[in-house]
Image (cartoon, rainbow, N blue to C red; front, top):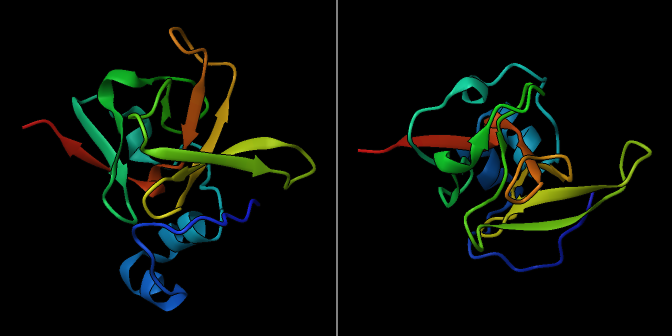
Amino acid sequence: MAKLDKQFDVSKTEEEWRQTLTPEQFRVLRQHGTERAGTSPLDKNYANGTYVCAGCGQSLFTSDTKFNSGTGWPSFYAPIEGAVDTSTDRSLFMTRVEVHCSRCGGHLGHVFNDGPKPTGLRYCMNGVSLDFKPEE
C-alpha cells in the first residue's frame, strides 16, 4: 500500500472517519482494502449521472466513461479531470497503480492499461468507495 505524503482538503482523524463511514467503507477507503468482486450494485449501474467519493462527496467519474469490464467492479476509462491521484502499490507481491480521491486521499481502486478507447485505461474501482448521483 502506498503512503500518501500529501495534505488533503478533507482531512479527518481515524476516529472521525470511523464515525462517518460504514465499516466496509472504512476498510476500503482508509485501509486500502478491496471489496469482493461482484458485490457492488454499482457494477451493473448504467444510469446517467456522476460517481462521487463515498468519503468526501467529490465528483470522480461520469456515467459517460463507465463500461462493463467483466471484472465484477465498476470500471471507467477516464476520471473527471483533477479528481483522482495515483501512487505505486507494491502489495500482494506485484506492482500496481493505486487510485485515490484527490480531495480526501481515500483508496478507490487501481488503474490498468487494458481498457477501451479512447484512453486504453481501466479504472477498476471499489463500488463501496463510490456513491452514485443520478442526473436530475
